[in-house]
Length: 273
Ligand SMILES: Nc1ncnc2c1ncn2[C@@H]1O[C@H](COP(=O)(O)OP(=O)(O)OP(=O)(O)O)[C@@H](O)[C@H]1O
Image 1 (cartoon, rainbow, N blue to C red):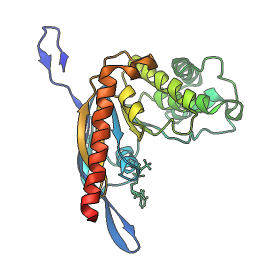
Image 2 (tube, rainbow, N blue to C red):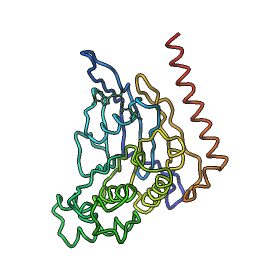
Image 3 (tube, protein in one colour):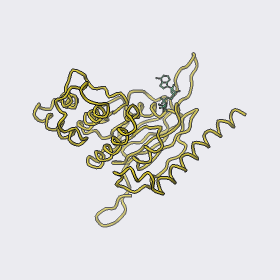
Image 4 (cartoon, helix red, strand yellow):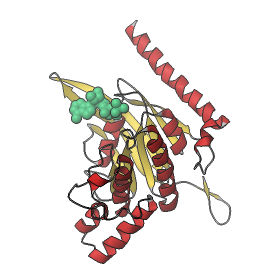
């Protein structure tokens, strides 16, 4: 809860509302339900992670919010308006970096700005600012094939942030990286989030990553994908040091989530027997 200047608690404003979203796909000529009445609200400036076992529908949920998939029922409200389809106000970062190999790093970051018709000088200024924010100062003129996976993902984040999106949607963005680079990237995204105050909706199946990054965790159940529990993250900020992963609060949250996961397995066993 934020406080106003007179010290009175102000209600937080939901930026994104996923309301009763269900999704079915066709499989072998039959409909199968992947998401069942998913409800989730994300406040402006919040960092929310969606977590759950493989196949529970995390990516499908994110793709519906991104406008890349259409829900079968329910609605997605962004900043008070019902959303249909993708748009520049939704920045996206996926596991694959999707950078254009024939462009330099800075030219990749400028793509969205170019489409918006921003002048060359201004888009270069914005792109360089974003590259600096993600720790890529000095790599502006390098080609994509000349930089590491971690650097490519930084460039992809800079490109998404350059458009000043209302929300940044990230689907397991660090999964393809080695363990050390993944940890560096987690710290980097927290720093970028703190500076830009961008709302972030982040998909992961890595419990430690979700606790380290988020304000709120949405744990999903499987078959069909549903919201099992929404947990407020009690781990103090700032969290720039990985050592906070040994904090009591971190370990308690980890235990809580692991217990939730084992209850998902029990339910599946209940169904089997
Ligand atoms: N375009 C599609 N057509 C048909 N089925 C799909 C499609 N996209 C996803 N699915 C199915 O929907 C279910 C949920 O997929 P989703 O990718 O959202 O899972 P996830 O929770 O993100 O898993 P993971 O952690 O492994 O990435 C899976 O059974 C998947 O096979």
